[in-house]
Length: 429
Image (spheres, rainbow, N blue to C red):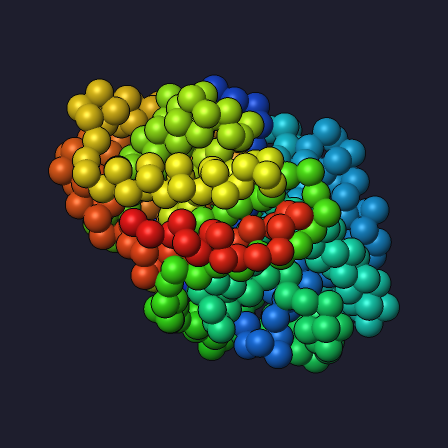
């Protein structure tokens, strides 16, 4: 039986009898409609043997269907009317999305449904797209910023899917067969593992009617489970990779919190205070007071059962050993607490960013879809603002003490440096 419920004035949710979930948000102020087809698929579902399969699969779906046999015919449906069509693969979600003007949005829904259900998956297309993926992997490795991020992931999450490159390696992607891709299609691309969101000046009932016609008989199956996070980081850990670059790219990482953790909003405010604005502690001390970096920032990432807290910067290689103790000192100091002024500024900045982000139809669609896929519920903007407002300064101090610990610290450096020893000596809180 089809079930429909109103989650809040802004969101509606319908579950088709197959288990496929449809969420919409009606935005009368915009002519842009954003469509997202999200699947519980990504690098955390893969064995080491199949590393990169989710990402390769995402690429191949753009190569042709029975109705639209060529990549050009697929692209023209959206790009031919001024829209944008793309996809992404992450650790826990693979998504296909497009953004079109309102008169054309139904064609976008039809297109992605066709790609998902009727992709040819031809041998020649798979082999050609493997070559494209190889170049994507090589381009990422050639980028010092991308390379340092990959190295850090491997240090924070050693010997597990969380620490692997989402795209896999040239060797692992080369070994993936068409039969393995078809098996992956039949396990992950199934109704109960699918969330579709549409945001814009649209009618929920019209969207549901169209998707019921296109996807109502979408089959179900046995979904592969996410491979769980293993807490096997014994820090502090440092890895230095020599590159003949103008800057030393430094990235520090700590175990953070999961997306369901009660401390997630407190850690988010801590990140804002430490390094997410021009008035943050790291920006003020490292850049403004000492001139050690052009860019330095902190960030947090949350997943279903784990998370990371990050600090990244690029510095003059000759001053890298000078910069690191300054960063470490700021990490240590924030465990002593934050000022009332810092706290209030971070809270208002966070709420403001959220509200401004929700002016974009694609952000609204992803806001709904990611929550539904990974948490099984959708909090409204008002819910999130209330959660942020419930954080107290003492919560930030507590989460800083919980997260900023030397035994869960990892550091990666890419640049014209060869020894990790000078950095290891500085990683003392």
